[in-house]
Length: 166
Length: 211
Image 1 (cartoon, one colour):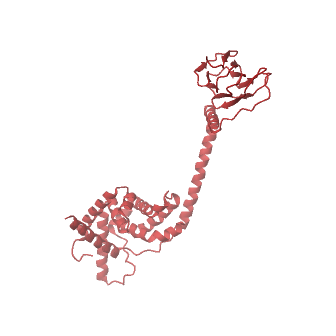
Image 2: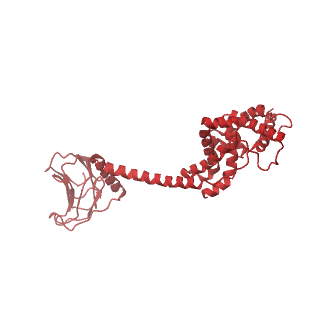
Image 3: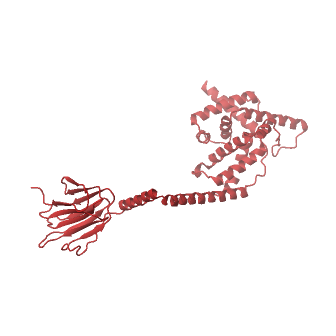
């Protein structure tokens, strides 16, 4: 399959993952593009694991980029607030509430370790535990434990256990 | 209890998924990084060429160093000998005035040399002579009334005389005096080791089976 076809097929999920992982939509764009440049430079030996390979590479690129102080600052401050596509124009109060929600989610995810965050977010993208284990370099059993631990932490920060919580 | 934990995790997962989807940034119009990808592909191709050139350069440079060159030549020769099946030596009609039969000349591998006679004969001898030379020459010497056939086969490590059990020919093998040792075996019999000490030495071995 050509690189452009692969890009068209995977860019959306990869961008969503990178944006959640970094908390920075601009950085997420760079991560997706860099992942495909990396694919052109050093393609994986096994094409059948392409999707997992792309996510793994995207995680590595994101981590490298986030090590920069500027990016870290951006992650904490949350300068990059974009409104979800398709949302109706919000009234000021709703916009404020939504911005606050985004900030909370971003901070909660940022509080997780990079590995826990990658595992949880890859699961969100529908990867199987064994695929996640291969991508982050751990055992299939550990993936389940890491997901449970990450959910426990997020539950406290985001009130996931409250009835009626989103 | 375990079921409760599973249910709790599932509920948390559902709520987290909803929260993430609600707060995802919109998908930007992401363009395929065509220029950077093309550059990367070109860099990759250039790297391959550079790697190949480096290997060739190293090989050429190494070939200029005498010990390395000698090693490469020796290794190539050994590989060639091992890969090539032993072939019967070209049989000449007569050589060195030996009176008829087969003859062969070849360069032996350095070190030890093996002479194998396939089986004992009713009559005949194997003469081994050392000489100031770099090649081995061997000849089948048929006297008047000699019977049976024999063929000389060059081996990677020596020479094999493929004789009929009824052969009565003799064989003359001249070897470089520089050889370290020569092992001689007739049929399945004991191996005799000859150690050359200089040119002009001669060993005559009886090819008749021991009584």
